[in-house]
Length: 112
Figure 1 (cartoon, rainbow, N blue to C red):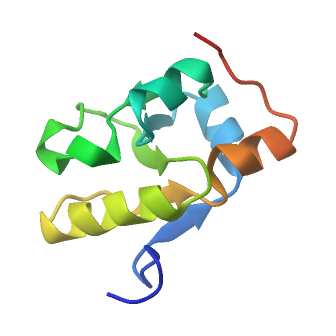
Figure 2: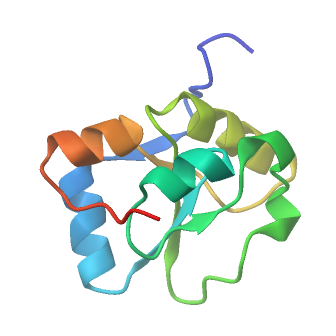
């Protein structure tokens, strides 16, 4: 597939939209970065499922919430979305620009 991890079927949301969804309890963030990156900083409440071992079948149940994939800049979350599509998982959304965009919007991260 060409497009560097971005498919026409990928839905992107921005940091402000994700923040609003989190504030309303409407989103579950899955961070596909590696454990060391996640430990250094992550969005509060995010679940770490690294791309290196990413399996859509291991996604936690998110009853009543939209699952949003996220990485550092958007490439790896796009690759994870491709895996979701191949597995016919109903996950199609990621954070445009990843954690970099989140931080550029002056939104908080947790460390450790």
